[in-house]
Image (tube, rainbow, N blue to C red):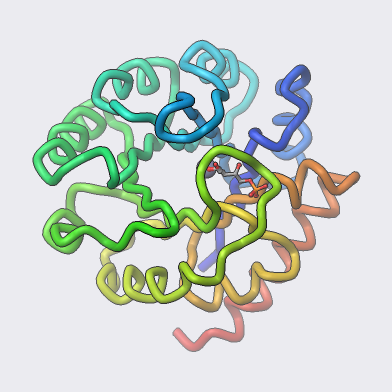
Amino acid sequence: MKVKIAPSILAADQADLKNEVAKVELAGADMIHVDVSDGHFAPNISLGPDTVQSLRQVTRLPLDVHLMIEEPEKFLDRFIDAGGDIVTVHAEVVDENRLLDLSRTAHSAGKKLGLALKPSTPLPSWFQARLDDIDLVLILSVNPGFAGQQFMPSILPKLAESVELIGDRGLEIEVDGGVDQKNAAQIVKAGATVLVAGASIFRKGDVKTAIQQIRDVSDRTIREVPA
Ligand code: DX5
Ligand code: ZN
């Protein structure tokens, strides 16, 4: 198994996204994490479907769109049409039935649906019942809105719980927020299959070295974890 690395462009130079994406693609990133926040669900405003559409033109990597917005059902179609490959919605703003609708919409378009949780949000009571309807679980390890915050180890029990409930179903388990070259081993050991990293990739100076270091740590850790 190989852990996927998803650089978060929230931490990139927003006036130079085309080159920033090209750099991480060349450096071996597995997907591009695109954070969308609406100023309501998260206290910041980032980007919208038009930017996703432009990104779609400049990379072959899957676009992993993280919707930190209040009404994902209003925008899911737009982000799918724009070229999002995985679109992730937050558990705080959907119930079981709405999740099912969103899942049908995404899957009928041939796209994947993810379910995200803020650090303080427990797994919903319906989590296990809906595992066949989602493709990815995103455990947010910082409060939503900004790149460059510190990883919150308080999410580790929830990560362990999701790994346990997911078992061998093959869903991706993505950890997002404050992931860096130092804590990647602990997070991979706990069962993450996708590492989102913003500041530790784009704000370190050399993107290639930054990705390579996270890759080395993850590969080494995976080899150490008994199957
Ligand atoms: C937080 C976002 C994260 C964030 C990751 O609102 O969902 O994706 O940009 O950036 P770092 O790795 O810098 O915490
Ligand atoms: Zn994110």
